[in-house]
Amino acid sequence: MSTDDDVVDSPPLPPATLVELAGLGEVEVREVPGPAQAPTIVLIHGWTASADINFFTAYEALGRHFRVLAFDQRGHGSGLRSRRSFRLEDCADDVARVATAMGAERFTPVGYSMGGAIAQLTWRRHRDRVDGLVLCATAPHFAERRDERLSFLGLTGLAALARVTPGQARDRISDQVFLQRKTDTWGPWAVAQAARHDWRMVLEAGRSLGGFSSLDWLHEVDVPTSVVVTMRDPVVPLRRQVRLFEQIPNAEPFRVDGEHDAIVANAERFVPTLVRAVDRVVKRPAS
Image (cartoon, rainbow, N blue to C red; front, side):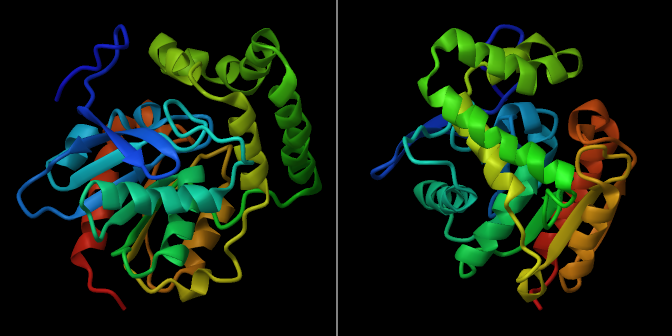
């Protein structure tokens, strides 16, 4: 794998291809070709992260078994920019668009946190193309209690402010929402990656995530599904992750002793579990 020369002291990263999505713009798509005839998986990162921040520990291990595609979601990192408000449904459609552009007619979405919501929507909106689902550190909904709903609703005002305030004000918003919370864990490279975000869109993504629920249709999922559960997660409570695999017919749980950032902080445990979870999905027949 090549090292991203645009970032000082970055981890080893797969090469990126610039892909044009008709009428939307260009996105950088990382690809690990995998073995000949390997099934395609599309990695979908979490809120306030990027594909590289979320999955840099897993690219190589996954690429030994699968064809791996990954790109930044709207407003995150190098992801698409739009004047339209952020919608998780648009991100789900982007997953299908990127797969098409990279020549993958069928694929398995692998979603982490917010990416899990996008993966669920990708199945719902593009059922004829999704072979399976791998859902990590995620849930069928993200806001339940009154204080959680108010927290997500508060992002509406911040997002509106970010549309009109100058760069310095946006920097203060980014410090409060992301950098201050993540600096010690992910280091200078990840902070530099996060600084590329369009924070108006990222904040709108938080609001959209707060309004997401798949509880009305999860029982319809008819593809092999693995749910990777982060057992000590303070961000997505364990009971919500458990509810996710309980609602999906024949879903198989995979447990990791770690918090929400286990794919980075506990990569030695999380990554082999993720590889097993994906492998189970691609080898199981659809119901």
